[in-house]
Length: 565
Image 1: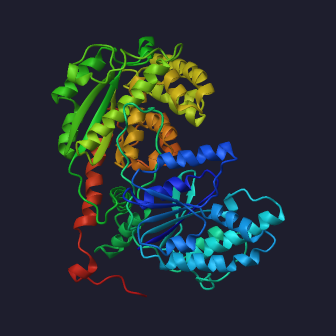
Image 2: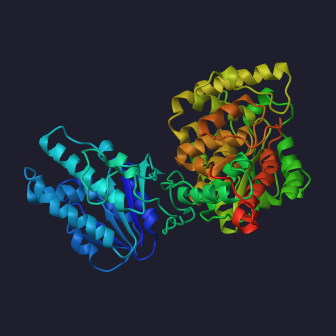
Image 3: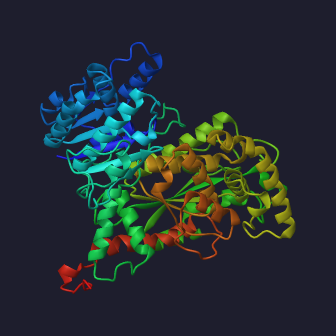
């Protein structure tokens, strides 16, 4: 059995996280709040929760938690203890909270004794609305107490903030609360963090989210969970057992820990089907002389990639990956098998016009999600995203400048190697594009429609859906990373499933990586695109896996570890 406590504030995503933890099989869902028949808003919220739950779950509406936890051993989710506590205080009287002592003792004892997997959802006192009244103080005192007591006996506890679960796993110091003890009011997070035992790797794996439904809203992404922090901790512990000084492989060790957390298994498995997907598209702004090459090169390079003659094909072969190229918005004609997801011919000149329509934006995001699903469903265990398109660093710079609130001149790069006159034309186009983008920076669809392009919108959908499918991605250069900024707005938390393959000389690239809190693996002055920098980083990723999975431990090799003194 495993006892998990999930804490969070109002609308934090704690319920959705708990549903991921408990799994998809037959589950007993204990709804503790009284029926909200007189509150239309609460009725709607309860209905939304109910619709999200799998049909195989059995719902029990009760406040008698001691009784229900004394029956059976099926995986059980209790949502939530705040509603339960309010209902019980209504029953015993808010002026006589001491009558809850027996109730609290019974709940803690029943949770500790439950023979099956149990997930308890509770509001964290400091993050929930607490009225400055006698009733409010009674509620926070009792809720802080029950949270701390349950955290002390839980196998693990998490705090959910903005949909992102944060493990509370610090060892208990001297004087930490013990099971059954009272704690000061509002001590929920502090006491929950001071657990009396270190959580093991979770017995309940994350829910495998389904592929994107073509009939669903392409802009509706499920709440994401990050790579498994508990398995990541196993990888960190394993690094200390390997025959090397601790930390001596530097970032390779951190990379291996991230991969392990993504896969949810330690040691991690070597990637068997790394797949590079190149999204191609032309941009109307290229007609203004912002690139060193004419627009017809895009279609020619798509054909070259499909034939296996481009740099990305060579680098992919060296790295043990395969390549797919998709015509999303190429101005010219490409092979039918390459243009199945084509949205339009080129995108509008973003200096003066929108890149595309609302309908085309939605279709492009859907295409990206569909392509990601196709790759994952066909066995891809690692994805690399690349780009191809004359003039595409201009919309990329506009996106980065607008979304990071950076002055236009600071995001203008040389792209494919433009001269000073072309640089000035590009700077003017980026300035005008950013002016048009600024009113839309809080709306991912609108900013893609206005100043991106169908290829960038498809990349954003691809990256967000890869995170939904819990599949790691190596990002390439500035164009891909600009799309990643929007993808992380579409599906908050998606960036935890990506690593940056390299840093290009484009000034906007460093700005975008900083915003995503990603540190590039390589810095080789690359500005080719196509996924080339990410492909060069792939052997490093494979090496990080091999170190954790194949290197001997001190015990197995009979090598003496570091002395205690």
